[in-house]
Image 1 (cartoon, one colour):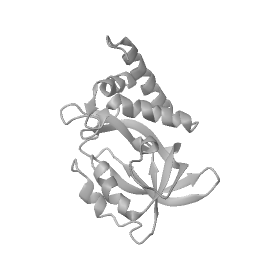
Image 2: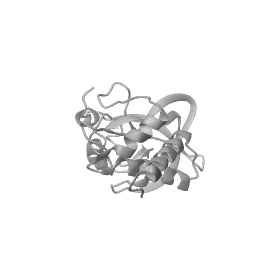
Image 3: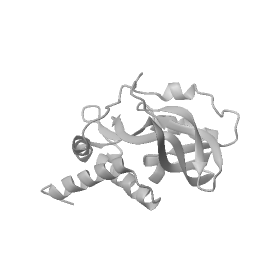
Length: 194
């Protein structure tokens, strides 16, 4: 799969005839929407787990020193919590550009705290995209995140903001919490510790 998935996503026609679409965010979309929306609600999806296995060459890293950002992996019995946004279809164009580094739109069932469900979209970077980095020891992922910086800022900010946003939602995500712990430890050991 090409590194830039913008055109692939634009060929997907799910929800084209709808006045509004639910979009599920599980990474930076939780704490930094950056687009207009009609409604915002905490939600979760089943059968997926969040992992920092996707490379970021365009936002939180560079082509020569990629950062690591979240993607979803299929996992039986898993629940991934995040934020759902009800958007108009015109918002998908800018989102396709924002998520172009290997992410493809997928249709999922969103579940809300009140028991409601809705069909919606999520952007997922699978292992067959050119930016996929895959599994690594938590300490190695944390070191890469602590060192990476891209046009959207330090990779560490992405991780730590996500960790804080999940805590604010009262969500425990062991993978994110472990990485955040390691990055904070690396920060405290740095000569110019924050």
